[in-house]
Image (tube, rainbow, N blue to C red):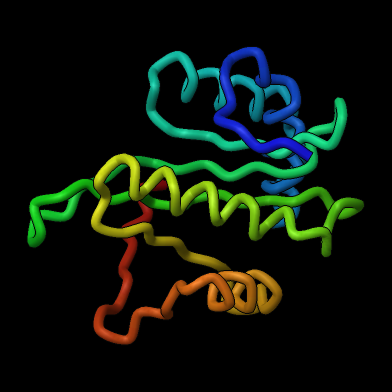
Length: 147
């Protein structure tokens, strides 16, 4: 298996995984929308995407968005998406992706990497905690929905 930062050449494979990821979170399948969304991220350099390939098959991806910490005056990353194809789970791919994310954070001088996951996504919580992520107990997270 190989892991690397995705480019526009990986659009089709990443879009397929991104569509499956959205379906995992109970969204309707929309491969065209997924492809357009990922293409925009590549074109505008708005995110960093790492992929894992097993031969010619795309089996996992993660997407990071840049942000900044005003308090520390440093860069930070939001790990917004992480998905491993159902047929490729329990092979350490999630851990490979998290390690690559950590390395990227260190290389870019980031203060931290933050993420959110569904309260009932116990396997993801276990994976994150196993890899050093700590559930925030200091701050509440709020969101204002605009539509």
